[in-house]
Length: 195
Image (cartoon, rainbow, N blue to C red; front, top):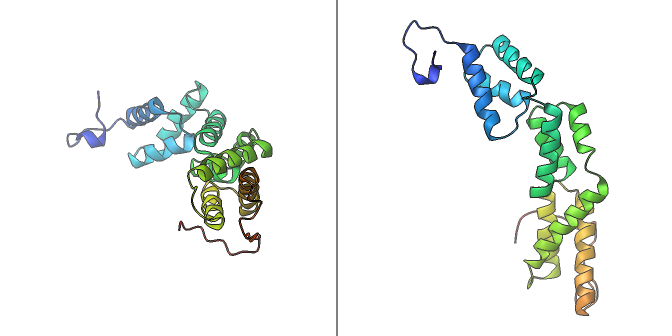
């Protein structure tokens, strides 16, 4: 059995790059699905020649251990459900994982605009519930900033947060836009720093 360079090869002993490539891929795939590009990068970091890495990766694609389309679908589904990321943020994550535009578009197509808005509304509602006692403007700014960090457009975030704040105020009997009727309009300067 040959060892990887990290395990201290004896001088003059040949490294089995195929074994290093296989061990690297299997170790990474044991923890979670990975894209072909992520595995290739890890192999390159272990000095596996590109032709050896490609041969191992091709074989793993052939036997179904690597499936970029399925990886993209899993990433979109899990990151949207668990972290509430928008399609825009998910597209960026897919790009960083080396997923091609066509596969990314297919995976992102599973997330429709209504689902994305429902998720933004759920996230905003939860954040607003934890920010009681602050002024409307501060709550609005903080929740819009949180949604922006998750990749939602400012327009969508402002609209949803305003709707939720108006619903709260109607339920409390204070009326929309706070006590004095002053609210921020879409032309207001948006700063995404917490107060």
